[in-house]
Image (cartoon, rainbow, N blue to C red; front, top):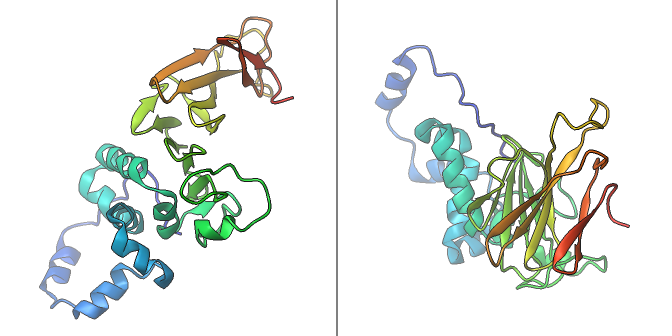
Length: 249
């Protein structure tokens, strides 16, 4: 699985290595293609022919360091989020992301998870398929809503979240990549106020992010002075929300 960070790698000392490389004759096309696409499993070649979004993601993910060197950190991140916000489940799998069943290795294909008798929340084009895809040990997480109508992209650094390509909770440091409650509501956790009376280094207090993907409206729920929200979980309460301090019941 390709690995990358948002900090740019140090540049080479001087231009001599670059000049020497440019003066060498190019390798034959077959060799260049084999090197360029060596991280792509042959089983995905057919899917790449049908999905331009998969090709874009595979190219950028497999050569992330080179793209970052070309674009700079901010533009690289912005464009990658855009690509991931368009990508489908099979596009993420083709790029070598881990999935709900096994985040520590490349996804074998959403249709495989669809055959698993265990509970998975996908209702879209591949019913029962994985709903979450992980890149670089969860430095990037892509979560699809159950019916594939929306997708959320989480970047561990700098703790940011996008839904359908739009930044959510831009003034918050998102500490957890969130979960779709259904095909409309996404919930996540963010760092809470550090002046909260119950906050300690051992017990951090968190805010709750609730995003309405249909209306594109985000709510930030903040604990009161007596609320020890260490693992908060929101639930619908009429037209509003109530928060359990210690997760789901």
